[in-house]
Length: 331
Image: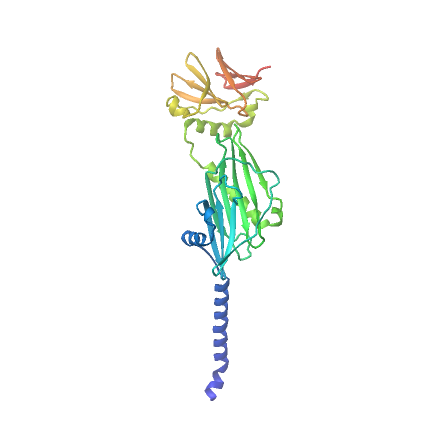
């Protein structure tokens, strides 16, 4: 009995320690979330989704929390009447109930283009409340590639809202970008910070893409070394030229169409349809970009006058001096 009295504080501490550790373990596991596999998510959808929409599933993802499972399904666009764009529901035991989600409008109307080329759903806790959100991301472009947008929509099952942003890009000679945010985004700084990071990462990936054709290399060089200053030509502009090997028309231009061509002596000038003007040194078989219009609305006609090339782009007449490599706007 004395031995027990002697060691009872240690025994109590050990038992309390085991109880606390067990309690923490049980609590942690009780609240732990788990992303569901594609197979398990699909199985849940097949059991609970209306059969009319089952074949229309485009993207889907799910996660479990406590004894509940949350599922988000995005549907393909069709002409079916009353077909939802998406559906969020949770499963408790064998019962599935819809999650009423409110879609918060953007400050401006979203671009309604054709089917998006890429889309995916990510499950991630970006608000820090312990319960993940569904992040639905889409890459979309108009048929001619002139207007593209990247859209992120955050589906928050706790707040029962969808909010996010759209990066809208107009691919003119000088691409223009605008970011549209849902109206309540300032209320959720963690979400906005996450979306800004996604936009920055996407920009970096796009900038690191290797140009496919030589003309894309020359366009990238123009943007970096001449830029809008030499495109608008507010005053005579000395052009920085990059000469590259000219592999032949089709290999250089790909499927792009040409608006006009003109030749004089050793040089040939080519104007792309609503696009850049190129100079070919036919003796050296080299090509360089000598003028990039500031927008894609102008057709540029070309004509040689001695060592000068006259570019008529709409109402603007621009002279390019081959010897001095200078652009100047004519009155």
